[in-house]
Length: 110
Length: 113
Image 1: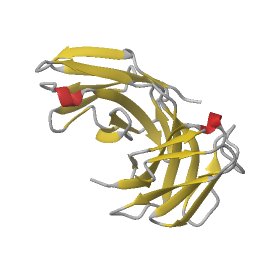
Image 2 (image 1 turned 90 degrees about the vertical axis):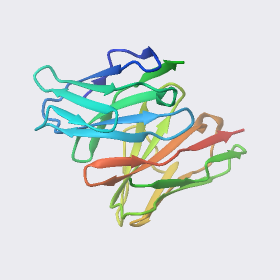
Image 3 (image 1 turned 45 degrees about the horizontal axis):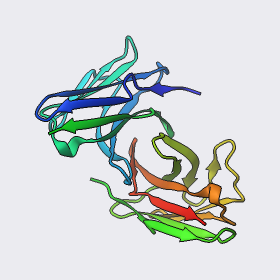
Image 4 (image 1 turned 45 degrees about the vertical axis):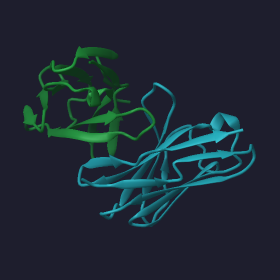
């Protein structure tokens, strides 16, 4: 099957700094990508998505960048806050086929 | 945003009993729902894809007779863990698909004694 992986399993950032979480995917045919946030003991929460015909999309304090040339996806969180501490998953999708990365644990240091 | 609920949030049962978990889409109709299992510090493991009005599609290695899935309406899918054993203890999460995106429920923590 296809694989979606994350470069960094853990990330610690100082409160107020920007965070960057990376993800690599292997299926060049994937046309839709999503970032999820999962807090301990809870289900994943949708953060932001991007389609393959775009290379950047911005939300509130978050930006997703897609580099199709190297099959790389990143999530940038601006002015990281303690409430941002969680595990972040990327997912690539084609129709009903979703493949999730293993997740990156983000810890925000006050 | 879209809201998906699960009930119960936590269940403890004796070995050999059956447990039913409900997944509801609260403000939209979901033709497709998914059931996942998640072990500590691991990613989501897809168990099955549930389509309203038809039989669920199970992933390889998932016993369909043990994990019964029913998707009787556009807002409700149920997962029944039959004859549960301690190795079935896990965090079970459902999701509903709207447009191209999956929205997840809060999860159900199952502990089998």
